[in-house]
Image 1: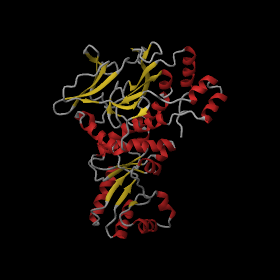
Image 2: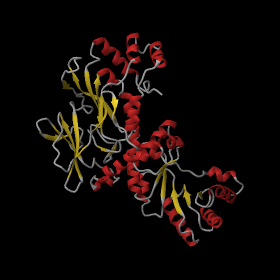
Image 3: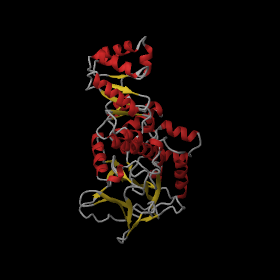
Image 4: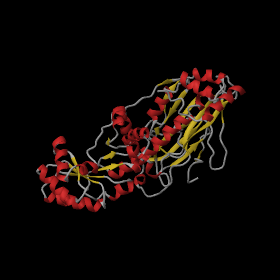
Length: 445
C-alpha cells in the first residue's frame, strides 16, 4: 500500500511553488530531531525506524493518488506528472532503532533534492513521534519492572493501526508480549491473553466460568479472580486445579495490598507456584510502587499507548543545509531557523556517545561539519539507511531489543529515576574548529 498520501497538503504546495521558482532540485539536507525531552524525562528512545524506512520505500504516487490530487486542485498537471514519477533517490542516515537519544540528537538526516526530501516530512514525523513516545514510556516501565515481564494490552485505548505500532514500539523497549493479534502476525511479537470479566459474567457461577476456561486451556492458564469476591475465587481456583493453577490476574483495588493478601492465601492453600499478574491502568510510577509486592508480571494498556502522559516525542524536521544552485556538485551551505525558542542548528552533523573508562555515558556529542574525535571509549551513533535511493539498513526486532538494553545499560544510574529531572547527560556541540560548547537545546545552556 502506498504511503504517499500520509502527508500534509502544504508539502505538495511547497513542491509546486519550488518547481515554478526553479529551486525544487537544489540539493538539501533535513534533520529530524527534538529540541527537548518531555517534561521531567531523563532520556528518550528511538523507535519506528524500520516502519519509517518501509514508508519511504512505499512512497509512490499511483494513478489513483495522482488523479485525486489533480481533481481536487492540490497540484497542477506539471506537478502531478512529477509526482507520478517520484522515487526517492537520495541518502538517509540516523540513529538505529532502540538507541537512546537526547535533546538535539540528530536522530535522522535526509539528503536529496528539496522536492524529494520535503515530501517525506509528515510521514517520517508521524511514525517517529508516536513510536518513540511509546518506546520511551515502555523503557521506563520495563526498567521499573526489572525481571518481571510486562505485557502490552492497549489496543482498545488507541486507533486500531496505532495499536499495532504501539505493540511494536513496546516490544523494542522490553515488553514480552502483546494482546494485539495483528502485531503478532505482522511483526512476530508473541501474543497472550485469557479472559475478561464478561466471560465470568456470561456463566451462571464463577465456578462454571473457571471450569470452562480450565477445560479448554488446562491448569496452566490465568484466571481472573476479582469479578466478585477475590478470596472465594482464589480458593475455588486452587480447588479446581489441585493447587496447580498457572496464574491469577488482579485488575482492581489497592494492587500492592491485594497482591500480598492473594500471595499469602495461595501459599497457605499450597499453590506456591501459582503466579500473580496485575493490571488496571498501570504506569511506570505504579510499577515502581509494586516492586516490593509479590507480583510476577504486569499488563499495561492506556498509559503505554499514550506515552504515559506524553503521546508525542516532539520531533521536528528542519532544513539545515542546501545548495545555492541545482548543480548536483554545488556545495551545501548551512541554514537555520532563528525563531526564539524554536530555532534549529544548521549544517551536517555527526553524533557520538562519549563514555568514561568504565563504559558509562557522560555526554551526547554532536559534531558540526566533521566527525568528533573518538578517544577509544566513545561510541559512534549514526548508521547509513538509504544510499542513492536504495535501502541499505534492515534489522530484526530481536536485534533492536538487544541494542536498546545495551544502550540503556550504559546510561548513568540517575537515568533509572522516574522522578522529574533534566536529561541524564548533556548534549555538547563541537564545531569544525574543534571548539566545544553546550547544545542550544540543552536545559543547562
